[in-house]
Image (cartoon, rainbow, N blue to C red; front, side, top):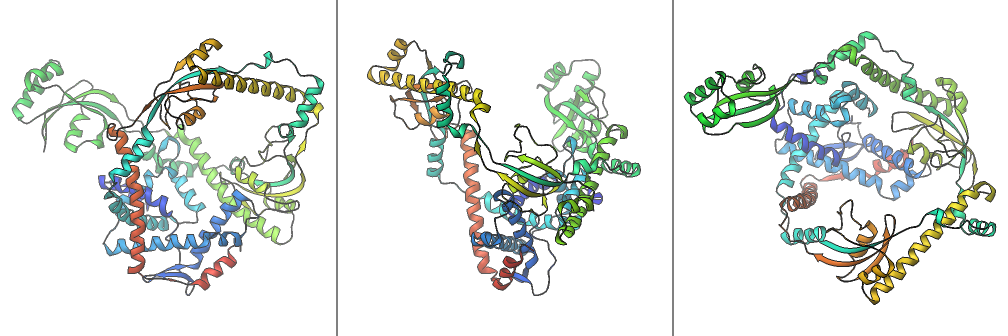
Length: 629
């Protein structure tokens, strides 16, 4: 199907709708609309269209797995249901169906060229060089359990919904009072006179005595406490490791190269100038003069009375056919015969040529082979997870499961929540993945996780053998750390005391006088807003927050990038709505999008009346009861 779509050209309207489709993806996801319907198992019915129970169950299970990866395996189905997550998913599926029904009623559709363009422009399917990668496309669909035909059908529905959304959001009107108020808040600026009080250096602080070291260690246990460590056994199916053992058939690599060659090729580009004239005779005279040796710029001014217009660096397909044929047949620096278009007569000159490049098989063979191998490895690992599930369900151990798939479990004597061991180095051989770490620290001693997928397409199972609680490290093992921390605490306390002393003097006299007496320099800041400051500004984020809560003339103190700061608010610069056109338009677009979303919500509420929604609570309750199966 994709091969057939390759030959179709996408229109400018397709490019616009492709952008709208991104919005639709974000709102609904690509897996919401396509599932086989089982008789009498619908959880909802909308205008004659049913939502199968399995679709709701799949979506709920996917969300549950994500929540468990973030909060730990102890996060249960019951908790998810109690939080309303199941009902939220059902509402989202119902809303998607309602918009699809309305799109069909309005006669909206999506052509093959638009679907093709959307697929090829999806960043998720791009490989090296930013071009469409068929291997990645198929791998992504496989991971989601979708066929190509099903995915294309989903896109068609999403495009139709996107058309409705775009029509609603395009007409969103932002109240001027709201826009002006937010503009003033965002763009109000302030200026301040700032005194920087730099911190000292550890070398400037006298070494603490043995008693001071012992006392500091005792009073600051959180600084010197070892984290919780866990002894675990991990069975990890790494797709990158598995791919190294796979040698793709050279014939398959060659076929994939031929399939992808067009998308990997870089077309020739030319930098062009033109003179556009309404009179053919004048155009011919200009072209002949330049062909005869006259400078293009001089001839253009003398004969056409105007300077050439730069068209930029373009591909052949970026130009109308007649102009493209002429421009791409010229040598560098040459001018072609005048070309007629509905706009007039074009005299084209080529100033630069960037040759096209078609990749050679030998140059990209290794990369394509690697991608094919990784795709095959992921498919293999998915099959292996089924073997692991069967082995564990039958009472087998992790070691037995490892034998079944040819992978040896790894015993890790101690690993912290950040993936490091007692030597503070990353543990090798385990997933470098936050999902793994969160899962590992969400289990109790003796618990074994389910088979869980990592972000890179791998899978793991982890068993907790023992837990070593956080413990204060003996002073003998962290003495130098204690000395360093002691000195920095002294430095910070001294800087804070100096800042408070300067603040008191400045309030009693003036900041300029107090700074001069103390030997500090005053720096004048450039205007800054709540959200933007010059990178070299003496105003830190903490000081900016403090100054925006102060009145003109107030003197305040706050931490700075290299110490403490004391500052006087010198000026408050009010923002005038409309003074910055680009900023005003950007804010207007943000607010319009928010209002558009509210409009869509109102439409959905109206559609629920037009297309009555029937919820089968018994089927929904079954989903809640079997979602972990």
